[in-house]
Length: 151
Image (cartoon, rainbow, N blue to C red; front, top):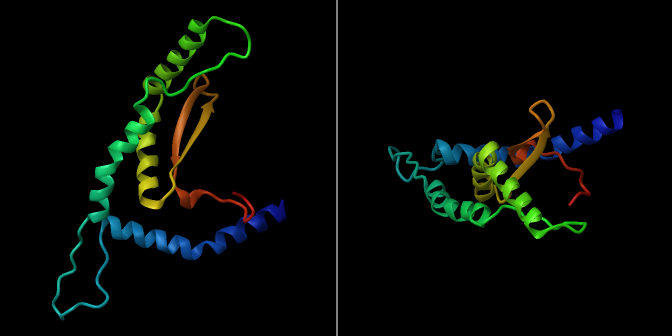
C-alpha cells in the first residue's frame, strides 16, 4: 500500500508545471490575464474571448457527431434470434441513454474540455443504488492519475 501511495504521490508531484499551465489557461479563458509588458504606462488590460468564440463555433459539430446518428449503438446477437429483437434492444438502449440519463449534458462538458485541452474524457458507471442506471461524468484531465508507462 505504501508503494502505491509513493507512486501516486510522485505522479502528482511531477505534473506541477502542467497544473500551473492549466490554471493559467483557465484564468486566461475566463477572466483574462494582466499584461506583463504594457506598450505604454496607462495601456488597458483587455480580455478578448477568442478561444471561447472559436469553441462555441465548433461545439455543435462535435455534438452532432456524437448524437446525430439514428442510434448511439448497434448490437450484434451472439446466438440466433430475430433481427427485430436486436434492433429493439438498440432502440431501447438509445431511448434510455438519451431520455433517462445525464449523457447529453455531460457530453457537452466533455466536448468543451476536448476542444480546450485536446482530450475530453467521459466516464460511464452503473449506479447500484439507483436501480442500476447508467451515470455519466465528464472527468477533467487534472483529476486523472496515470502511471508513466500507461498509454
